Every structure is written in C-alpha cells, then in structure tokens.
Image 1 (tube, rainbow, N blue to C red):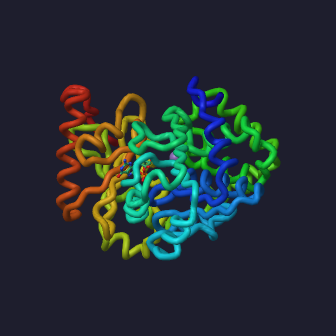
Image 2 (cartoon, protein in one colour; image 1 turned 180 degrees about the vertical axis):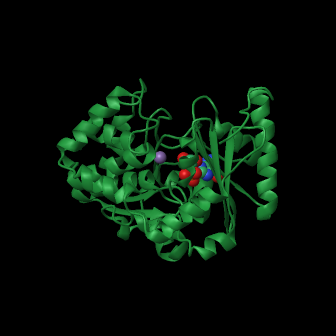
Image 3 (tube, rainbow, N blue to C red; image 1 turned 60 degrees about the vertical axis):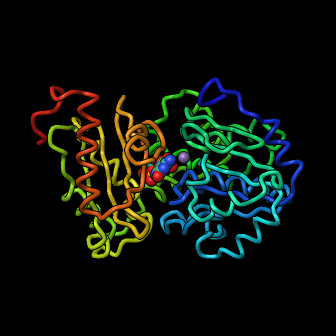
Length: 352
Ligand code: 5GP
Ligand code: MN
C-alpha cells in the first residue's frame, strides 16, 4: 500500500458505496487541486455506478482550477445555501474529503454539525494530522502525499477498480501533483511512483494536466507575484520570510481567488530560508499560509499560536485582527517560536 504501512478500511469504503444511493462529497474552504481532484474523481466513479452524487464546496473554487473535469458542476455552499441544504438533507452518505474537522468548511460545517449524526453514513478520506470528527469509516493517513493518492489507492484495490476511468484518473493525478508541487515535496515514498505509473497507464494526458496546473498564470497574476516578492521581508534574527498582501494591494491587482496559489512556496527557493509565510487581508480575517523545509514544523506554530493547523511543512491559520497588527503579531510570535527552536545563535548573518 502506498503512503505507509497503514491499511486502509477498503471494506468500509465498499460498504459505504454499495449500501447507499445519494452521496454528498465535501471538502475544505479555499478548495485546492487535491480537494477538488479527490471529490470530483470519486464523483466520476460514483456516477459510473449510477449513484446520485453532488460535490459541495464551502466557497467558490478558484477559476484556475475550473478545468478539472466536473469542477463547474460543484456547488458552492455560500452561493446556494438552500439548494445545498436540500441536497444534504436528501443524502444518505456524506464524504469528508481532504479535511478532518467541520470547522474547516465554514458555513457548510455549521450545517453538517447541525445534522443528526446517525441519520447519515459518514466517511472521511484525508491526509491531515489529528482527525477531529468521528466517522463511520475513517480513512486517514497523514503520511500520504494527497487525499487523491489515498482515494485512488483504495478504489484501485476495491471491487470498484473497473469504474476508474481516464476522467477520474486525471482528477486523482491533479491532486497528487498540486499537493506535492509536481512531486517535489511530500513525495519520497517509492510506492507513490508506482501509483502514479498506474494513473499514467489509465491514459491521462500528463503534459496537458501539467500545463493546466503550472503554466496557467495570467500576466495580471504574474504582476501580483512580482509585487509579492518585492514586499517579501526576512524577519530579523530568523531564517523566516513574510509576504504581506493587504487589501489595497490585492485590490490594485484585481485579486481573484486562487491568484496567489503557490506564491508561498517561492521564498523557500532561497537556500537559507527554512520557513515562508504569506498574509492576505480577506473579508473574514487575515489568512496566513505557512510552508517550511526539513524539521521546522509549521503545523505546530499555526495551531499553538492561532488555532490553525495542516501538515508539518504546510499549514495555515486565520488571524482576527487588523492587517498591520497581524503582521506585527506574526513577526513577534515567529521570532519567539524560531528562537525557542534554534536559539539566537543559529540565525543567518545576512540574506543576500
Ligand atoms: P494553505 O496555506 O494552502 O491554505 O493551507 C495549507 C494547509 O494547511 C492545507 O492542508 C490546509 O488544509 C491547512 N490549513 C490552512 N488553513 C488552516 C486553518 O485555519 N486551520 C487548519 N486546521 N488547517 C488549515
Ligand atoms: Mn490535500
């Protein structure tokens, strides 16, 4: 089995699919390639089985990911609350894909929490640390590169393996590529490459998918990237960088959801930096994205200071305060966290 020695509850997944007929597939806010790939790929499999199935995402997916097969059919909860509520009421089985706590799904999570738990069959398929919700079937593996890796691994070893087609395979491949930066991080497991080989054998167009994921930026978006790098600062006394993107800056660049996807990884190209942070002023607070290299845990930082979470090397949180204050608080807290970890000595002398 790919990812680790964990053995997945494949009989549980088969039961969930076999014994139910109306499915809701949900994912976390700010859906990314893995969240959309895993829900839409599974939806394609369920559709081939003649099951009724809707994908409900908490908010509008970024336009840069709308090419993923089926993405335009996903319902954005925030935009169509009553229609989504009806679909949820009618469903007999709900999948939590690529998240493990209802708090990660905004208003959709409030609806899911309000349901009589026993009235639905719940399945979790996820690769984040420390699952919060308890589901009838729990398929959770924090060592997996992506939720797409897990769901594909389960399906290909299940009685439904013949229902995986080139459409669902393309979805699953997309999630693995986006969550690993094109197999550059979180992708050291040799078995993952056998799994990717299987996906390639399904006939997916690897070059086309790669282009759609990585070479899809508008000139406007590249200019926002240029501004972001110009604004990047290294927190004094640390090897940690910070990119502050306030509302006026985002407005000036006519920001749209998804525009900054991948930006937070770029400062880690500097050989001395161990952690990169991106702050964005959003209507619901200040969104912080964190990425790190090696043994620097950003999930611990995000959860300890701001109640956020994610993965060891990729995490996030929301800060509820004014933007300028958030920038200062983040600098102060990170300096404290960094110093506790490395001491004052281990800082680089100069970032050139
Ligand atoms: P991103 O920076 O791409 O939004 O998120 C990086 C990772 O951290 C993703 O796996 C995402 O699910 C997780 N994450 C982002 N924000 C939060 C948050 O506020 N709480 C928790 N628990 N996880 C988060
Ligand atoms: Mn993921």
